[in-house]
Amino acid sequence: MLRLAAADLRQLVDLAERTAPDQACALLIGRRGFGDAGAVTRIEVSPNRAADRKRRYEIDGGLRIGLERELRGQREKVLGLWHGCPEGGPVPGDADAQLAYEPDLFLVITALVNRQAVQTLAWRASTAGAFRSVPLLLDF
Image (cartoon, rainbow, N blue to C red):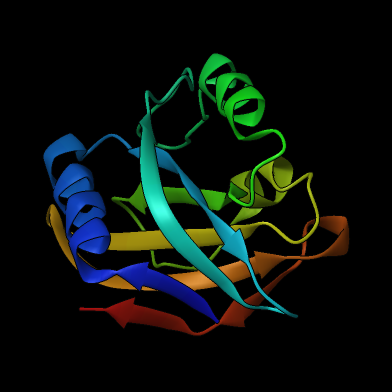
C-alpha cells in the first residue's frame, strides 16, 4: 500500500495535464513501512530529460543524486517514481521496466485521455523489470 496526500496527487495530475502531450515525471520521497507499505511525504518534480518526451520520461539524474545526498542518514528516502502517460493506460510498459533498475521502488502512473487525467495506479518494482499492483491510499 502506498499512502499519498490528496493534495500531492492533485499537484501531479495538474502537472500531467499541463505537460501533455509530453510526459511529466517526478520523484516520490517518503518513508518505507513493512512489506509493500510506504508513505509519500513530498513530491520532487523533475524535468523530463528524455529525447522523445511524448513517448518516454527520464528523471533528471542531478536531481536524483542531490536528493540522495540530502536524505542520507534520514528516515525519508526516494520511494519511487511518478509519470503522466498521455497515451495509454496507467500500466507499466517497456520504458518503465528499463527505468526500474532498483528493486522495491514504487511506480505511480497517471493516465490521460484528451489531456484529462482519468486514472492513477500504483505499482511496485520487483526483479527483472516486473511490476505488481499495490493499493494507492489517499490521505485527505
